[in-house]
Image 1: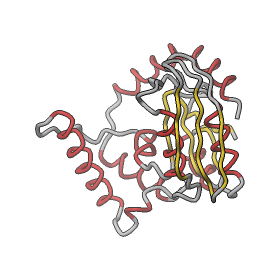
Image 2: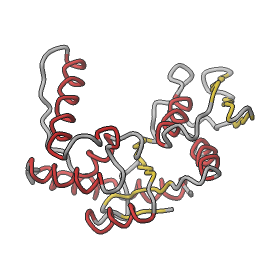
Image 3: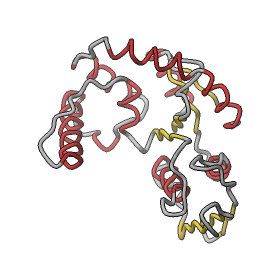
Image 4: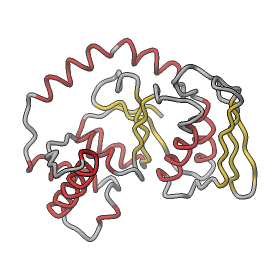
Length: 223
């Protein structure tokens, strides 16, 4: 995947994207709409961990989990509501989608490359399951070396330091290993050809699942 090319396009579209987001926020998302979208996402393999629940019960479960999460953040009871659009719902399931801001506060202390590799592992239900991940920095601006073991074989790569931005090499390395496992990953651009500004959304989808999302949400994809 050509992330550098994507990033250039995405930056040029930030203003239009923000305007569109503001318009969408003015349109109230009903409970019925959210439940309908949960149903569509389930047809695409989302929310497998809730497979014993019906769509309404999944809605309530997600709501409870959101309230608990926000209460922990604010250290008091807090209800963030459930006005979630299709994109926000999809991103809840980390085994099907990962949403990454490329300006990720990369530094020696934050171990962002390690977190990204682990996120790819979760995305594949640990079929891609790297062990002994090491993120070594020599100095605050590198050099940086990443190492992990996959099925007792060591892999190493050296991301370039670019302030707090991720080097696309981490995506290339992980996606190459995942492709070897016959797992299909695609970049989702949402309903805009420009995507999500400086962020990317990677999904694990079969061709059939991708078609369902295209037909129902008008989402666009890059393979």
